[in-house]
Length: 269
Image (cartoon, rainbow, N blue to C red; front, side, top):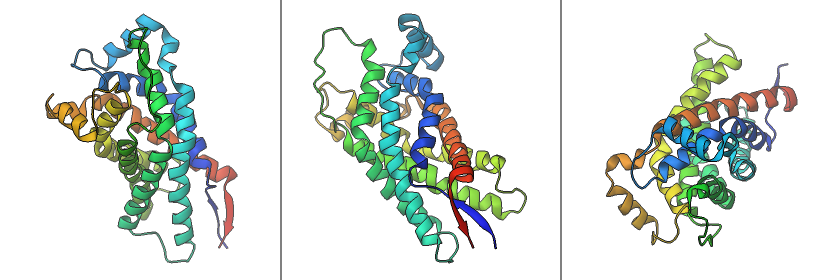
């Protein structure tokens, strides 16, 4: 008999919160870069600007909203993906085909993105409002940008969860590495790169919509206005996005695998 551990449905949310605590400053700098109307500062310059004007703790503005987002958005997408994957895999038919992982990841990410939109919008506003004038109209719908948030959630979940599972399966299939932290690191690094590449254009549009004060009539208008700044506008903040998302992905899966190892559901086969 062999024993293995299965993840509990809420482990993804907990692991994502742990990762968010480590990478939140990078997320804040990314939001500031994306909401510039013109490219004025780069990553390091923006971080120094925030610290100089508002202090070191300003790098953690919106952390509470970020944790709330992880416990809604990430918890939902991980719960859907891992629950369905484990149920389908329990029949002894082997790992799911990659296309099924992609479809499941897209569904889980879209659902999680919609549920997490209010916390995501609050997170963006808390990070970015420090640079706005003191007197301003902060009226905002909690589900502003829900379409883009859900679409982005689908893509990033495909990049993270589906690609992580597939990368881990391929690495273990070589027989050169076991199911250990090095395998988890390598697989999550690949997944983080895939997620960054897939979701960056939508991430830029989502952030602009959520930070909008009424200047955009909708997704298409925001897309058009962003396109006028040139093709690279859709990849504004790509470096800090990758620097933030890849470590966040690595930490999330390392934490998740450790939670699974020590506190997961014991299955004997």
